[in-house]
Image (cartoon, rainbow, N blue to C red; front, top):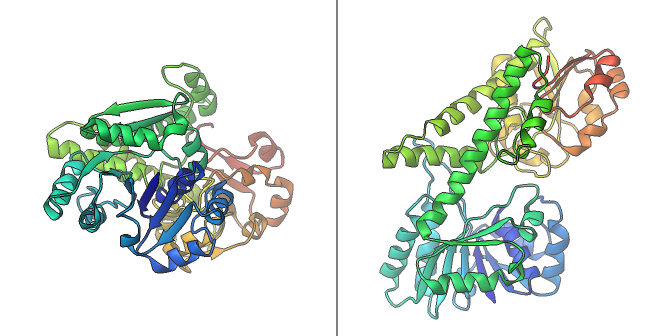
Length: 435
């Protein structure tokens, strides 16, 4: 099949690479000329485990191409996937759909033979209706089926998730839309769940899923606070909970709060839609409020360790919103650092992240020092704070770290390090969900 993808971000690029691997002809479109030039030259513009190898393979074999000219991509496409950003409105927090509608307007006059236009971006309920009306208005003769095709790719695991989906949701109002998308995903036939639903139901599924997972994370974080006061150990409690098949073990890891490009944006959008339709989504609202407060509390937890220290030095491990990605959008680590700088203007922060330094620098600028390894970050520090769950951090040599630090304090907000070893060495070790 011939597939055009509008957008080359954390959804568009992994999806394009995956579909090319299935022997489709995939052309990805983006307005950012510098990004397209890099991609044409074989330079991956974001980090995802396993992405670069498949990207280079399909680029070399001619199944994957890139352009800034949408006219090169649309006329011959069997399927057009819209995978542009839907950032939150700064005031209302609703999803900003200007890039979605701009893409639809550009696509419309280029449509001729039957084409499926699918929204991969996470969009509010009713967006498909508006896209369809817009296309028909711009091109009344267009033979098009607009569908909702939500993505369920976890950042850091996008390539794995593409090839091992637990479900493929197709939201269409006509059979031929279902049929064409099933053809595109034919390699998954019999290997995963295909759920064919109405377009509005499909648009709701992604928001409902992300809001529920965010609530699950926030519940684990509230439970951690309870365990610290009650003398229980949250990891043991959530392990016991997770063995209940009705609950499951995933998204029960307590930490500094959820972040990234999806959960904060989608919970806010879900809450906005609830108000818009007059539905009481109080659990979602409480989750949003609690998650915002948690990141400030985590900063205060770190500062409590250096309360008596003048010009304290803090070593930070982790800047990305989670391990396995370089994405710093709505990163709890970034929010915590900003809170630290605001609460203690005399603080010095040295940070290390295996992949996200350049993305973090775009947000924080020169407010902190960026180091090239864990131990340089730890040198001279009064306290070391673990903010992102990179696997690399589990191998931190605590004896070496102790010899490099000025203080003997660790605040492990991801429960990555060994409580027993750290305390045996003489560290004052503070983690999440235990006394």
